[in-house]
Image (tube, rainbow, N blue to C red; front, side, top):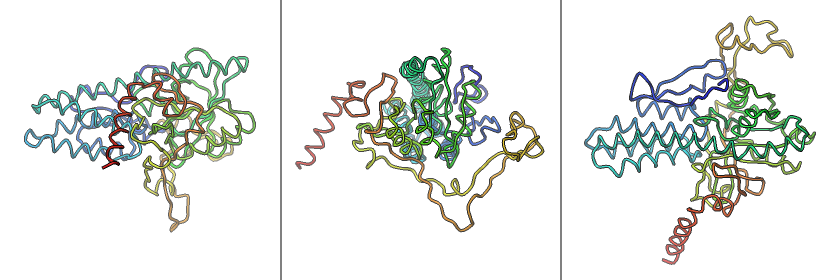
Length: 403
């Protein structure tokens, strides 16, 4: 990153039908660029978490629809693309942005009649989806900045201590992320910051991705185990919590990486502000009770049973408490990446990818249009155009009940 403008997904300069992404399964030890071409490439990249994070999943799925359009025969075009759309949506059931992006591109193609024009419309809409996500991140950063500025003033210019969970950063979106966007904005303006980074088991996105991002950008941070957050809050070592979201119900309930709910409970108990940052594409207006209705993805148990990391073979201080972790050597020096089992053979694991934080525990939602209360009325205050649609939907439901 190094403060340079970059995107996590871009069109290939060599193959007009391909897009490039950072293979996030290889970070932080290797920076590998993957090219996605076929519809299957996009499905595997999303399901296998080469790309992850609400916004980037959406942008990738949008280009996946474009790949399906390129692969579709003129005869039977719509059915081919429709089947590809269903497969893409099924890859990550909790993330709302994915479905939103797929339906956006499908809608753009639906108004065209000729297959070639449908293919052109798919590319145009995929670009719009990607640009919208990038703009949302920039706006979220600007709207969240005053929160950090206020805390900085109250602390007399001492570092504002932010705790975050999982990775809702630049790697999770097209550009600056959501939870990290206000952090980057504040850092750019010279405000003193310190970020507590949850490791985020089982895939360790905090340890491998958020730490990599913040380190590249020069933001002071410490990696902590997932269960340390409550302790730090009790000890007065945290000033605010900012997390992202994969789906937010219209009542303000927010689904995010497993463990987020516990951080919200600790923040409430210690009187700390707990914010959720999200673009409007993450809002599911059809769900009125997130705890009861948001689908929770259950992933491969192997993600819990094993950890993957870099072996510091032959490095100075390797294995010594407090010794070097490998640093720059991890970018290509001695050692190798290995997968290690951490539980007894025969022990079965369950791997729930997300939990839902009830709106009552959320101080506010930071969106591209501003900050609002975590409630239906709060969201409608920022997105008033939804009032008519919500009224129509409720009216239709009432009529259906009467029949």
